[in-house]
Image 1: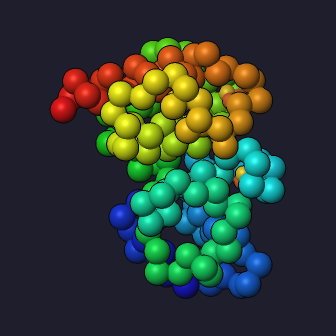
Image 2 (image 1 turned 120 degrees about the vertical axis):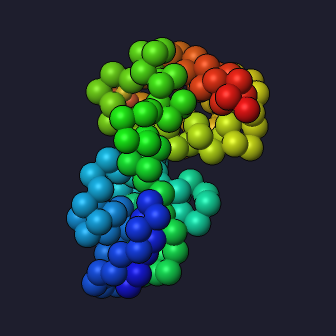
Length: 154
Ligand code: FES
Ligand code: FES
């Protein structure tokens, strides 16, 4: 099968049971995408598939054949962090960091569609991304701050 992952076209073998999250981690070697529940509940495996955040544990790799995937590794530009990453860093918005890749991609998607989100909209957006450390106050503050930075950057 063929996938474009973070702009790089890759070909690899997958059988009918290979999950997209395993293809991303084990075939493409991008381990920023995490395996949590494997039941579609936690959001640790979130990637962007063909422009939409997607829980990659709930997608068979073969069904994404020919598609485009962006992972958390696509956010930074070399040493320059994405504004969403910077805001999470500055607001101390993660503890163990396990949920972080999914939170970042979900926050980025929200800010693209809703440049000035309310706290209620932020909470609704991250509804499918669980933080076991329950750092939600700082996560919401970070998404708010990230949105402000992206607006300011134009
Ligand atoms: S590992 Fe995919 S939602 Fe939890
Ligand atoms: S920071 Fe630990 S799960 Fe969210």
